[in-house]
Length: 396
Image (tube, rainbow, N blue to C red; front, side):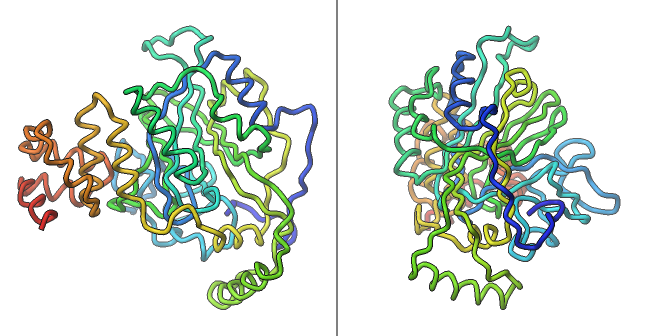
């Protein structure tokens, strides 16, 4: 999806590379490592639709009723029936919706690796600059690593749990397997003071059960977003093309999709959001144009989603609870999220005596549920005060 069409309905953007630009993921890691970074695992997101989205708050529109978080801003998860489904749009990356004011400045989606999975969010901090006035070290940005759960997420979670902390060190050796990936710019987003940036499944709304990453921005900040992807000629395997033709026929009948295949295969593996001021100071640029092709859109929409078969909402919530370490309320909030959506491990963990006093405080439980975007359930618990009754129903 995008805000405007390129010339020609099925045009593939030309893939040009400027050799003077730092465009590979390895070159980006070199720049970051020269800043003596601090690397943290900040949580996990589960993708069930095969598409990941990045969202910033939106301005409200007169006459519309949105759930508010701050002032005149609509929460990034606010649903809109008119633009929620990308399949009816046929556009890559962006949605431009006059109803809810979703736009390239506050929303984009992209294929998540080969499809579904539980993916790791890493945050990076620059140690070369002086500490800011509020005592924080400058945040460089964050990364989403999109490879099958068992190949990356499980290992890095196990490492963090073994160390008992979210800090992962000050080098990026574990990420060097992606050095050769080439990058292209997606968009930039400005988040106002007291705004929240969300990274989550493109289908996520309030009460969905998905684990999302959110970053609260105390001060105004602009992030530049890049995708680093495996790029190769489209698969010409006869059986694959036959299967794809059958699927495309059905999609064409239902949505008016193009039956023309894409000339290239693009599998995003790492999404990076970098503080724009840091980017400009380092002179980082990517050398490839963004692939912009209706064939790619449909390939992404109907492509392989082979990282897992069953829903991973419970797995993501469970992993996130284990990464909370000393923050008992954060740990409990993820267990409540998982339990609310049927995860037995999360439900059993709620019986730990350390949570007893908090579970007796229905107002805190309601707030914790709402902090995980469980708005309806959080309000229900807050108003009824019956936490134990709710848990009893879940156990029955």
